[in-house]
Image 1 (cartoon, rainbow, N blue to C red):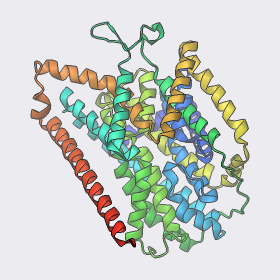
Image 2: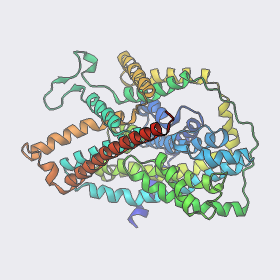
Image 3: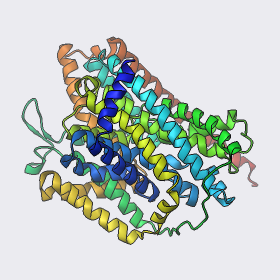
Image 4: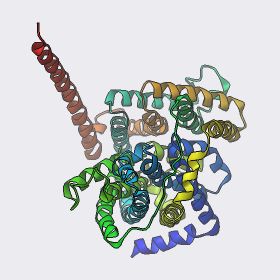
Length: 506
């Protein structure tokens, strides 16, 4: 009953006229950037971060959250109609585009829209019940436990986003070092500033986010010479009753899978869509049709995608650990507004927490209205020329980063990180671990110092405490498994090369 009372309290804030407006704006912008190849929620949230300074806290975070989960559906529209996926809609290309080739585009889009609504609804229930419980558990964590938990987040995000644990951890380390630039709060000494006055206060979150994600992504797309033509096919949306009955079992399964994987560090929509699709291929009544243009192949992954996007807020708001790059940017938005996500957030800012949870269901309704009956009009977005769109975005990036401190130096810093982000993309290095390291680095340093003070300089506290010792043990096992896997792969490659050489004629 407490949860129902809290949700009613949250809806009283979410249904306020100005918050409804910000929720609608977030959903519309999210759908729009999901449709446009090369943008996506990561770049868009980084571009709009400076805007949050002039918006009240609840409205700003509701809008940014709407952009995130709104983009998940927009992603699926471009994947289904034109086979142009984002990371979170790769699986939608398989059956969704196959249905388009069969002239069933409307059915595929209706399936994705309805399944996204089901997935979002299930995830909101999980979020409302589970986040406060995790927040209470988080009070058991001490400084040493938080250090170990952050290290788990580094390892998981590094491995999932880059596929290479070494590359990912190296990017995390660079982010942590960037977070140390500025004045040390304990000693008052300047660190890594190169005697440049504008670095005395450190590097701004907005500069790194806009550079590494916004400008770098735009530059990469400008560098691409791929031509895209608009979708001109016919769209008939309404399914038959028999087709409707095939949607909901896969949507429910995908919702549960996405809700679970969204909570895990390093999880999120990208992994959830593959897991839901794999489960449908094993247990669906129509599993033999999946992969050839089947409703179940669209429904499961769309529900998992949307559910994971919402439950990824659970570790951020309950224990203060972002589990992917977008959540790192959301954490940056919280910090900009003077709020530290974590177990104290639910008790200290209940109107923000429950208002944000309730707004997700309101946004779910907005997305259903926007994306099912109006989808044929959204597809006209593909006709916007890239040579018109991207210069405008770059201009607003410069305006946004300047508006934070009214300092021209911030524009040059953002441009430098834009170049750095572009080079990382060309080198196939992911900027997400860097952003995570930059945000969590100061928190890691603070908790590390506090743990050593409490233990009088003894590192044994990190291994003797049950929580931190268990987490560090899991990290050790995972890294040992990675080393063993590396040598086994190297041995297998060598054996295959020798076998190939032996079969070749002399």
